[in-house]
Length: 284
Image 1 (tube, rainbow, N blue to C red):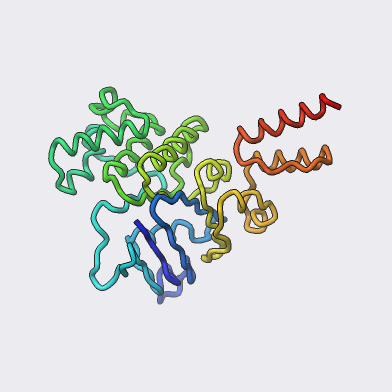
Image 2 (cartoon, rainbow, N blue to C red):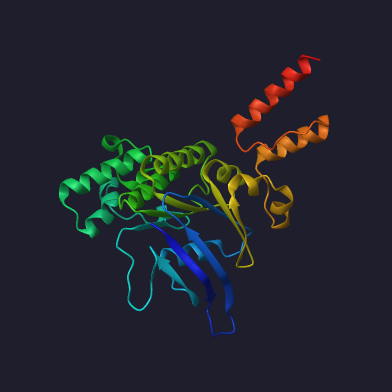
């Protein structure tokens, strides 16, 4: 799926004394299979941009295109082609069992019973929940991390071509956050599902994103490969973003040793750099 915003704008409470421009003249394309991160300071328009991309909120100016076709004048986006989860999606859980909650979306698509079961089982496995153990349980008896996984599974059961997630790991413990991000990356690689994540944790985006979009004051101020932007400390700090911890470590090593160290994006890269520096020090 290719989704495109052309000079799109959106204003909250337009025409009132309380109107607030949220998205201002944004042009953005997300192609099939891409993993895109969207970052920016609070109030920069990230969540509003995600809402525009989903088609839930129509732009006040500009337009949205899906696979080259404008979404306007009654034209609808194909049901189930876009899956979206806003912040704290577990608040939308309502069924008596985990199975029924995850099955809600495919049932509404009208799939058969066998196809429904296949989708539910695959979605639960994708988020790391054992289908036999969790399927019959009441979702409200689960931990917050397990509820978040169930909510994500409900979106995945749509088998969308584009997945839009607004801070999918917010308020979770570090181990659960890392596991969810890792599973999303695996899902993208295995099935080619395009994914866009709004996030504030640069360390997570360093693991997830192949491409990074930075927003500020409702505008896109940078759109490049994630490695390029996540290692640009000056750019990140200019827009109120903290560089990934590994980038900060590389910078600190350079400052302390006087030896230039290429910024590391992952813990594995940082460990390799430290090992190399240790070996160089031992050989002197």
